[in-house]
Image (cartoon, rainbow, N blue to C red; front, side, top):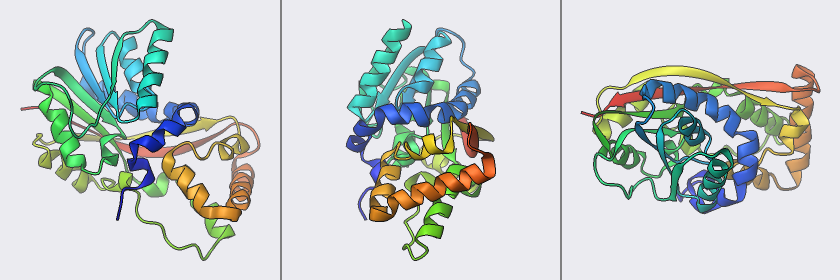
Length: 269
């Protein structure tokens, strides 16, 4: 089986703006928990792996940290640089494969990846690379999804599809759910040569102006866009059912949908 859409860097080039608008504010809540776990004082250096449109990198630069950010999507990197310039912040952002970081050993005081390396075809190698570029005694923090049954957005999408197309064949498990069980997440750290991680659970809320606003932007990531494309002529009906279900439950105004992630942090020995 080949890579899933979310694992193909070039596909993210087409989702920069909508991802930033829809999903970054949601994932930034997980990022803040990971940043806190790193416990860095101003002036320390940190690398953000799989930085996306730059939410975590910008937050860290705003706290006075010396930030480097990499992403495999060149357009995501361009967006990070543009946003940093708009805010008068300095971020060293580069297009790079996170499975083969182009930094010397022990370059940074800390490293994090927010829903980034968990998408890599070889997540163990990605985390091992993160460990390699951090100085001894520094920390590495990773955010991964957990409790998919409590990820309301995905549950609402599944419910809309199921009621509109009950005979739809089952989809393969998304790559980003490989580490949803704590034991598997701990094993990832061990395989990458890191010590036993401290793992906490964080809940965030996806706040949007309305259910219809969200439905119109549901293709905010390659996997979601591919899911819509796979629905073919059923897509409009699924989107309409998605809106109806949410409006019935939460109303026609602003809504919030929750999701849960693990934040795992380990020290580099």
